[in-house]
Length: 62
Length: 413
Image (cartoon, rainbow over all chains, first blue to last red; front, top):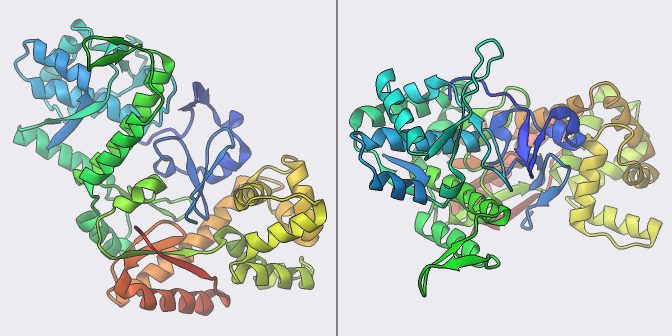
């Protein structure tokens, strides 16, 4: 994949998510496509991930 | 060299006559891979994905061979093309699998040396954008990072089989073909995501990139679901986490000389003590209960704190009100930092984190010849190196930032 990938839109939960539609926490923490996990979450910190709709996933071991 | 294609696609290909079936495998694998790479997560994920022709011809070098294989897949109704191409609008042709062929991925062997070589070259080109300071870590990661594939596969198979049974058609007494509904596609895609993440590691298809915006290092490990980390190979691996890392990193920023005049000193002392001790979430929970009379879980507190720190001003008003009542001048400071572009504050925090955790501490670990993996605000090391790593982390934080965090140290498995 030599070509630079566009960061948006992201297909998540049946919708194409553009930057303007995403939760602002997600937008703040999403800075490159390699940082996006396969299920569309990005790492915030402390073992926590945020999805485009603003829902969180927390690592129970952290 | 392995590629991965849906099981039903392989069955269909095996029924058909085509001279170079490896070209068909490469195309099908590429369509699934780009689908995943473009993060098309899905409840209904079988949508068209645009793929520039060079993605295919980087692997199948002769264009006529590529067209011959692609046309065969289209005429056999394995692949559907949207026939929508526009050079002017930068729109490549879109491809997807036939809905009826969506199924679990399985490996297919590529025996052609030339195709294998081009796949490896393509993979290596993705790992070349790392500066020399991380060369030792990058080399170690790419050489050693492995997963107990059999156990990890057993885990995801168990997870798949434990899902609610879906309505299906009984072909005989033991085999059920589920209806092709949204739930089925969602389940298969979730399985395939897990499957590809562990298969990529198992096949040595590793990526290692330093993010230019926030300085973080993204790898197969940082993007691995937490429940799969227990399958990383290493008999005696330990994870060292910075406790309450995000609130702690904010305390580092607040304590910079240029910011001290903007924050009440008693408040800053309280906040800094809470975060350095690693007790921030626990103490926040206690004070929250005292103020509201309502219990709150650590997960809810983390969500609340991240929304306070990183959301746009004017959103999450209720959550911000509670934080403001505990730390009024710090709250005002954060709001002021976000008043123009709110994401710049998150990037600033991530850069502080990556500067100390990656650029400084990893360099020291290299000097001591300690081998490690990183997960942004955490390190994974052998049990014999835990003590030295812990000392280095504390020493470097003190040396460069005058404060140290508290670490949580746990065996990985």
